[in-house]
Structure formats: C-alpha cells, structure tokens
Image 1 (cartoon, one colour):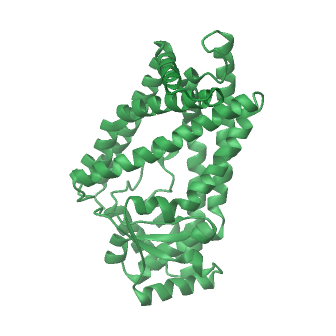
Image 2 (tube, one colour):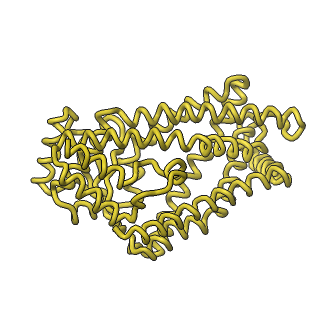
Image 3 (cartoon, one colour):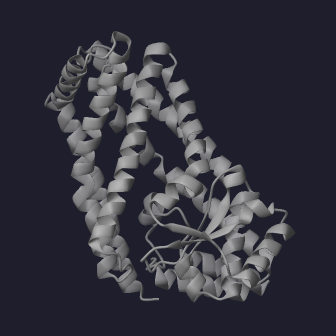
Length: 375
C-alpha cells in the first residue's frame, strides 16, 4: 500500500470536512447574532400571508419556508468543500472517472433529497413543540428513529436507484455460492440477494441495506470485476454478519437515543432564548439555527463514542466472516487489496481514529486476523 499517498488523501478529505463544518457553524451563529434568523422567519411569514394559507397551516408553512431558506444557505456554504472532497480529490487520486456533469447531477439529487428530509423533519419537530410543549424532545427523538427505519427500508429499492444502476447478480456460480453461505448461517435467502451498482468509481466496496424484505447486500461492480470468488465471499460474509447480529437495529436505537439527547439540549437552549426575549416562544421558527447547532454539537461531542461502538461492531463482523468462511488467507488478502485500492490509511493517529474512524484500521484488522490464524 502506498501509505504516503493514502495519508495525504485522507488528511485532505478530513480537513475539507472540518472546514465545511466550521463554515456552516459560523453561518448558523451569524444568523443568530446578526438577526438573520428573524429575517428568514419574517420573509417566510410574508410569503405565507401572500399565499393566503389557512390560519391553521400558517405555523407549519412558516417553519417549512424558514427551513428551506436555511437549508439552501447551508448547502451553498458547504458546496465548495463538497466539490473538493467528492470530485476534485477523487479525480486527482484516480478514484473516479465520473464526468463533472454526472457528478453535478448526483449532487443535485442528493441535495434535493436531503433538503426535503430536513424540511419534513423541521416541520415535524416544531409540530411536536406545539402539541407536546413539555415533552416534545422525546416525541421528536422517537420520530427520528421511526424515520431512520423507513429510510433504511427504502434505501436499496427507492433511493439508491436514483443515483446509480442496480441490477441482480447474474454470475450464477458465485451467486449460488453466496446463497449457500447465507443458508449455512441461517440468513433467509431473500435477505442475501446481491446487486451490482454501475458507477464510474474505482473504489471496491459492499454494504448491507434495507430492513425485512428489502434487505440485501450490495456489491460494487468494481469488486465483482476485480476480486476472486474467495475474496468476494469473505466480504459478503462480513456484511451478512451485520444482518445476523441485528446491527441495523442497534444503529436505530443509538440514533433514537442521540436524537432524544440532542433535542433535550435544544429544548433547554430554546427555552433560555425565549426567556431572554430573543424568541417569541420555543416553537418560533427563528430558533431553527439554534436547533441545528445543538443537534450538531451533541453529535460531534459523542462522535468518539459512536465510532468506538461502530469499530466494535466491525471487529465482530470480521470474526464472524473468518469463522463462517474459514478462509483467513482470502480475508487478509482482501483487506490488503481494499486498503490499497480505496487509499485507506494503514495506521491513523489516535485522534483521527477517535473522531473519524468508524472501522478499525486495516493494519489492526489484518493483525487480528493473522494472530487468529496462528492460534
């Protein structure tokens, strides 16, 4: 593995991501300090009045338009960093051949989808504030968990096809082998349907998506084209482990708990802003930037915990893949190839691991597999 090249690439990605977060946080704080959040709300209210919405719909309409304006501003602030991280760097390091037009189209689609989810989430949270003023943060947190399940359930069959071509795996011998593995570990066959994703990216990866009948393992076309059947099988076994251990449901519980905590913090902050006369009430749409800052701050503060939990889950999935296939040679060879092909850092710093690494480093994973092989 070319560690120097991988380290430079990953460091630049992280820096761009951190700078994007800082710029967006500065934007949110600026809107609060410089009366921009009130201006957004006033513009939204004037548009709602002009549209002559029924009185009972006006609060939701004001929140929706305010959320739309805030979302557009945040997207615009983060756009240069997204372009740098997901297009320029990928092209510079030869990780994609995607034309800029195709990249732009994909970003517009993902941005529109994110904006829609954000508006629906904001309106729902503010509706909870009005209906359950004392316990809205609990209701909103549970709502986040429910939405997470719904989005996860639709990811493979609705959202992913919006961005790339998804087709069933037609390599019959490999498909039969993977389905046999799924049956051997008592994973229902409908949960182990494989699909290829036609993209111009050179990364190789696999992911478990969906809940219940929509659950399936997605294998990238690069993986299928360049890796041996033994190597694909150990990767598939790793993804099956997430299904067998119910890792998606663990994520749902964590996201729900995180949302409840985040909204509780937001409730305290919005209450104080109301008491100070900055907001008319906690459900004032002018408090949207404060809500976003609270949720983001809690998520960043708890990132080390979330990453530690994720690394534990991934280590367990590695052990499961080794036990299910018994092919440690293929497992180790696959990790080395993935690390080199995807420009992963071999040994990230402890700080990097704490805040940015949802997986154990490839060096640790290879070392663990090697030690198990020697026992």
